[in-house]
Image (tube, rainbow, N blue to C red; front, side, top):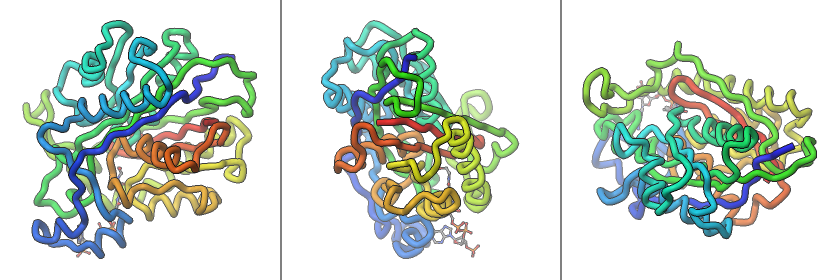
Length: 323
Ligand code: UT7
């Protein structure tokens, strides 16, 4: 059977690093509160010349280099983002143009923090359906542009960045020993739409709007939702937490990551944590965490890796893959 295997990975971060202490003169907060409640120590914030498209392009180029490929080798770009450069056209198309790519097709996916998990699952279906052989799957965000910098309950949590994978078709045996994407489980439930949202949009206010969140409400649902979709991938494949080499969760809050790992019985040393470095970068968080763990030699070819994310909508999902 056809499997979608990872061929390359890359990332890009804005030049400017903002430390927790940098908020202390802006809103009533402290490095101690932010670090204790979230695990975040710093985040990258985009300058005016750094956009979702420029960060996405840089991550895509890094992933192509890592794969030993050029844009000519790519059939499809799927960009997960909730902070596009423009309402339309899709920022994926802008990235396609920046890469000098005038063949194939490109589109954006919007599932907020679950965007990358949705995007890689979608790319896998295009590959297995025969519509694409090689796909650039990108998660890129500039959440700093939709933050209310006077709201201490949200502005300290998010950051900007991008991560990208090149995935390609390869023959597999149809067993869990195969490399590539082995299982995915996606969910959404719009009953929660007002718990994490942006208070503007083209069809309502005609403005971009700002991020609003009932953090405690999101927290309350997160662990249960994350573990449900992960357990769905376990029952589909027969894989258990003991079989995993790496757990690469969405990086929103260290306490959510720890509670999810504990509930699933995943050993602490298998958990990749980058929320301290990047904050919550929404759809970029999982590929950014993957790129850190690949670059430092933790994730290696053949390793069994579990991805998960949960965010606005609510949306949530998990992907099991062998690197
Ligand atoms: O990626 C999408 C998913 N998003 C998430 O996963 C976020 C989920 N939620 C969370 O991570 C946490 O709920 C937060 C980090 C947002 C908040 O942590 P918490 O432990 O749930 O705190 P809380 O909302 O219950 O607030 C505790 C107190 C409040 O004061 P009172 O009402 O107890 O007097 C807040 O006003 O902390 C206050 N507070 C702050 N204090 C200092 C809220 N933000 C800050 C701040 N600095 N930045």
